[in-house]
Length: 216
Figure 1 (cartoon, one colour):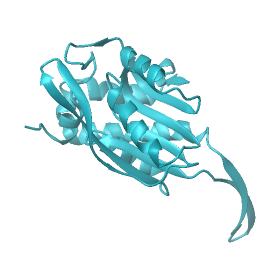
Figure 2 (tube, helix red, strand yellow):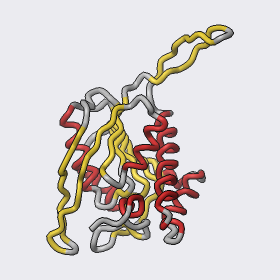
Figure 3 (cartoon, rainbow, N blue to C red):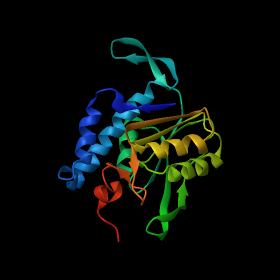
Figure 4 (cartoon, rainbow, N blue to C red):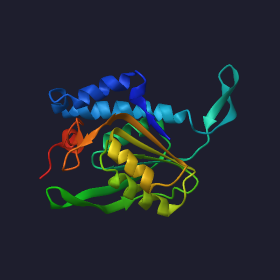
């Protein structure tokens, strides 16, 4: 199941437009803040799909009955670009465990590269809700490798894969390489093309550089 949130008008489109705009996006603080805001809003959408249990609690004036989240959640992101997005999710799921994956492109030529996972720090995801986020789903290779690395620590109850922008090619790659009905994909928008260097077009550029500064 793929949810394209751009199919419905919401404030997400406003935040995403600012992240795309080459003049506004130069403000790294605003870029990070907008990514975090979108994380909060997608987390809210995901929260509607989770399991809850009814509990009674004492207020100063009586007893209230409320639905309390019963699922255990692991938030995972791909370093470094995904950190602001992860923070948005953590603002909502403040009791969640966290996992971090360092994946990078190892270039053999300007147009030929492979994805390498250099580092992973994660709790068990067995029987938990795994939310795996990365701002850009370009080829889809990084997301698939991160997912497969994380599920070595147990089979999640359900996995939500989240991206701000996805290419059609990247989504097709997910479908072919994650054969699992217990995976839901959430994207703020879908773009049609990839460059020969596998960057999304029109996209927004390098999310990690825009959030944290250019790397050498």
